[in-house]
Length: 114
Length: 118
Image 1 (cartoon, chains in turn blue, orange):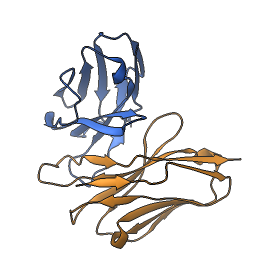
Image 2: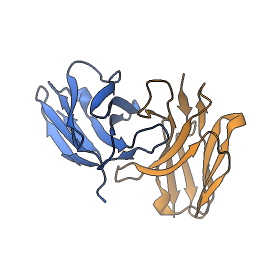
Image 3: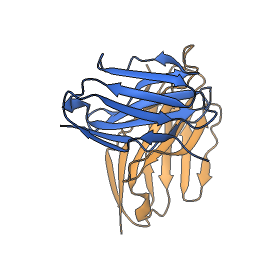
């Protein structure tokens, strides 16, 4: 079975450019999470969706970040305009509903903003 | 507040040594879930184990074992006869509870980087 799919795997862009990260969750999973990993802050949750509805976006750094989940099989995380401090690995994870269920992570997108 | 602490930032061992990674958590919930993930040098996050707060039975899977002790709020992970392929960053995580937490938001520790030398 396919796991969580993320694209692109690597992205290099210049400051000020728009960046769009994509995620396809595991089929049947109805919760989706976006995380950011940096050396300084570790793994931090940016936003999560349940049944395509954003439940908690308190981790979204600022208005430059936005996330959407137009349907059960696709989500995007957009940064506009990007800044060098946004350089990080961005992970998408999905799970079945309920606290006891396990989150399964995608391979991550390594973003470098020059 | 929910919190996960992995006090060991880095551990270095020689192959075949046993090693224990510590995890201490804080929560006010009576029902909660704990997880361990492995992040090898390739960067992906791999699920290892889930434990619920009602089950304090220790678990063993091959060379891996987990010791869950509610009394000390700890969920430690031991690798027996470590191998070079065990070199990775290991994360402990707590599933946050609350009426809005239908989705199971995870609180991660800072991770322990394990280096197993040949």
